[in-house]
Length: 625
Image 1 (tube, rainbow, N blue to C red):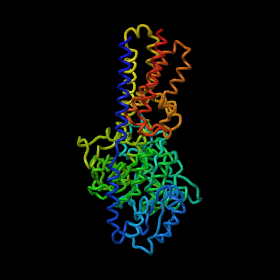
Image 2 (cartoon, rainbow, N blue to C red):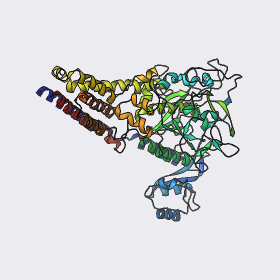
Image 3 (cartoon, one colour):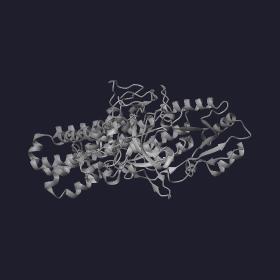
Image 4 (cartoon, rainbow, N blue to C red):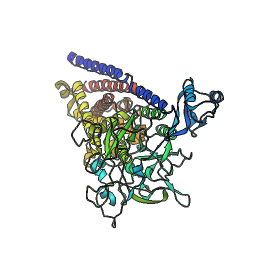
């Protein structure tokens, strides 16, 4: 008995040491962001030393500290002879203002003086971002016959979507479909109005779920696409799939948040883009897709990307279509996830930007070739409105890194839907499961490789589930593995404990690989450990609920079942299984626990796991006596 006590004390000592190491690691300061931001600020200052270049507007963006009052704003206006105007109805909360240059001071002098003000956080010329030229002239899909297609998905034109096969979607759909995950599409908008002014989508988005977005270009709530690019991007992420018409998307059951920042001509300003990023982060998006960009850095936009990352959002960005060894913005910002483009033969395309910031590659297409000999140019195919004709739609073939990014955003939604909510953890899953065509670890063209949806979900749904169950088995052996214990507790106790450990730690995690898991909340609960049931019940936005990711529910069950001796094995197993699930995510930091500071997530999970193990030991001792 003394030996067992020493073993338990040793085990908890190791856990405490691990917690301290985790806290030290999480507390290290990230200096890369501040360093790069300083470089960007000096670069823009140099660019504004003379006349503003063509991709800068004639207005300043002035970002004040959030505690600035209306009186402070009026004082700045009086002192420098400027008029500060909110960029949108959301600007006051962020203290983001626009201003024409002052007639009193030259531009550079005004900027330097404003930067010296204690109330001013950032000031810069507003810059113009937009769509790359390659993406303004898509090709229509021309086929005389809509081919019949059986199986999943049954969308007839899916045979022309070689890009979905390149990222392993046919197998991935069996493992997960992005249930409930909100993906923000920051672009030209997504929906349109018909002649009667009725709000509607293109036909092959009719079954896709939308959440409220915003039009920052025209300042109203409906982000209506008057170009076509944004609708195409949204289709790749979550086109209505297995509906017997048209084409398929990556994250079938994800929700789209349309945010319009680009006009019908495909251009927009930094202020609108920065506000859209913050809007998405504040309204439940877990993934942002930005298939837009420009060559000039903006500290205000970089700050917005960092803000979204801090709110638990993965920000996926197109690398740019200049064919240069330099990633454009916003993809080059710290905390952005930059994507280069591949074509059918898996090589990086002629137009794709490359560079050290590239995280992944994904299909972007090349409409100048037909490498798969299907009689169609090898573009990325989706249903969208005709270019600048919002009342007409077609199936159009685009090419560009703008088409590559939403493939990654869609796969990211699948990973979030499988229970991984911290953006760094999502990024790690995506990069660690990518397939590099040349077998390299990473390079400046592919990043870690071409995104692979099936491998990513296999890791989260399969490999991680197996590890959680294995950890539960190891904890059970450490605490109750002695021969004397097994003999005295009996077979019934052992079987109940094993079943409880399975439910608590991983659920029947192996079912999705065979396509056997039912859809809906019941299916999600069946293939997940008990703490992860919060996602099935309350949606992806609420994953990491501290009432589920704690010892509370198994403790309540232990109290409720304490008077049933035959169920004590199940109770012990459930407690150990939940402890294993919590410990796994304490050290594979993948779930953000609500209401708990990020730096304390690991300690919180370990503490609750230890409580579960302590109670499990007590219940087992009671059953043994």
